[in-house]
Image 1 (tube, chains in turn purple, green):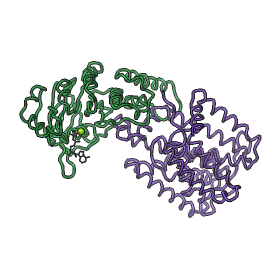
Image 2 (tube, helix red, strand yellow):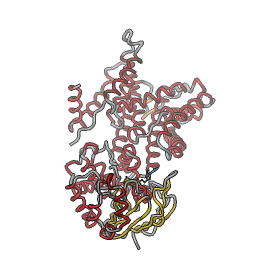
Image 3 (tube, chains in turn yellow, purple):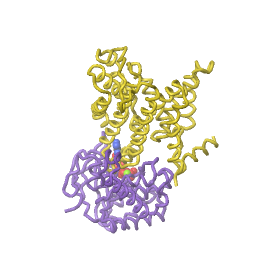
Image 4 (cartoon, rainbow over the protein chains, first blue to last red):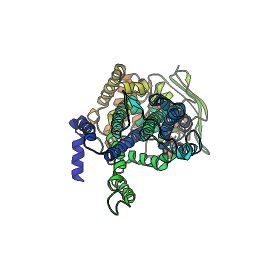
Length: 319
Length: 260
Ligand SMILES: Nc1ncnc2c1ncn2[C@@H]1O[C@H](COP(=O)(O)OP(=O)(O)OP(=O)(O)O)[C@@H](O)[C@H]1O
Ligand SMILES: [Mg+2]
C-alpha cells in the first residue's frame, strides 16, 4: 500500500500531469506495431468502455446524478446510425449529427420532467427507459428485432476504408483523446464547477445562483451525446448490433467503472473502464480461476469499495 | 422606500405555524438583526425570503419587486445572498473553488465557452479567480485556498462561507447565526468584519443570532420574534428593556445559558 501511495504521489506531481498522458499516448500509438489482432481487440474494447465511462462520468461523476440505464444512450446512437445506414443508405459520417440530435432529444424528453424532482427519480426513470429501449429494439422490424442489424457497411476516412481492427484502434484512440479534452475543459470552467456544486450540495448551489434543474439537464444531455456518438462508432466497428449488447449488465459495468475510478477524476475513470475490459480477458485462460473469474472480479470490487470507497484513484494533492 | 418590505409573512407546516403575520422593513444600508429563542421561526423566515420555503401567505418585496414564488437561484441573482446556519460549503472542493461559486450568479460563460475557451471566457475565468482570491485574503484565509473545504477549522469554514457570499456581489447579505460556534475572539472580529462588509461593499446586512451581546453591538435595528410572531422592534437599547423580550428570553434562560 505504501509503495502504491508513493507511485500515485509521483503521478500527481506537476511534470507528470502532462508527461504521463503524453507518454501513454505515445505508447498507445506504437502498440499496433507490436500486438496481434486479438490483443488489439482487447485494447479497442478497453477504449470503448473508456468512452462510455467518460460520457457517463459527466452525469454521475461531475453532476452526481444517478443514471442506471446508460446502455440505452449508446444503444440509441448505435441504432440511429445502423438504421440510417441500412434502411436509408446514409453515409456513416452524416449519421453522426443525427445521432447527436436524437441523443439530445431523448435526453430532454427523459430529463426535463425528471430532473425537477429529487435526484433519485432519475435512477428509476433511466432504468425503466433502458428496458423500454431494449424491448422496443427487440420487437421492431426496422431495428431487426432480436437478431438486430447485421452487415452494417464499414465507412471510409480520407479514402481509406476502415476494415481492420488496427484502423478502429486508432479511431477510438482519437475519440478517447477528444473525450478527455472535452471532459477536462468542462471540468475547469464555470459550467463544470456548477455541476460540482450541484453534486456536493444542491441547496447551496441554488443559493449561489445556479439554476440546478437546467444545469442537471445540460449534464444529462452532454452525457447522452457522448454515449450516442460512442454507440454510432460501435455500430460501424462491430458491423452488427443487437439488443443483447445493451442490457442492464452493460449499464451496471459502465457505472461501476465510473464509481470504481473515483467519480469525476478523468484518469481514474479511464483506468476503471480499462480494468473492466481487460481483467476478465487476463484470467480467461487461467485454469480454475478462468471459470470463476466473474466471482473473483466481484470479490475484488467488494474489497476496493470497502478499503477505498472514494475509488482507487487518489485525491489530487493540495497545497 | 425600504430595500426589503415584509408584510404579514406566514409560514405554516402541517400542524405548526413557524412564522405568523410577520411584518418588518430592512432599510437600505442598514445592519438589521432578527433574534428570538430556539425554534422561534427565524430560519424559516430566512428561508421564505430566499425562496427555499414557499410562504403560506404574505408579501415579500425587494426593491419594490415581489419575491413570492421565485426560486432561490433567481433571488440570488437579484442580489440577495445568504449563508446557512450549519455552514453549507461544498465539502470536497477546494476553498478557492467554493468562493468561486459566488461568482456564478454574476458571470455568463456556459458549455460552449468552456469547450472553446474563447478569450472572453478566459478573461472571465481570470476575473472569477482573482476576485475569489481577493475575498479570501479579505476574510483572512488566502493561505488555505487550496485545501479541501471539509479540512478547514469551523471558524475558517465560516469565513469561507462569507467570502463565497460576498463573491456574489450581494445588495442584501443574509447571515444565519454567523457567530454560532465561534469563540470570543472570533466573535469580536466578526463584529468588525460585518461593519467592514458594509463599508467596503456597500451591502445591507440582515442577520440572525442568539448572541445578544453581538447583536447589540452590531445592529442598528433589532426585530425580536417568539413563536413566529414579532414581539418587539427597535434600537438595541429599546429592545433590551422591552418587558416582552425580557420575558421571552427569561422563559428559556436555562437552555439559553442567559443569552440576554
Ligand atoms: N421544513 C420544516 N418542516 C416542518 N417544520 C419545520 C420545518 N422547518 C422548520 N420547522 C419548524 O418551524 C419552527 C421554527 O423553526 P426555525 O428553524 O425557523 O427556528 P429558528 O428560530 O431558526 O430556531 P434556531 O434558533 O434553533 O435555529 C420549529 O418548530 C421547527 O421545528
Ligand atoms: Mg435557525
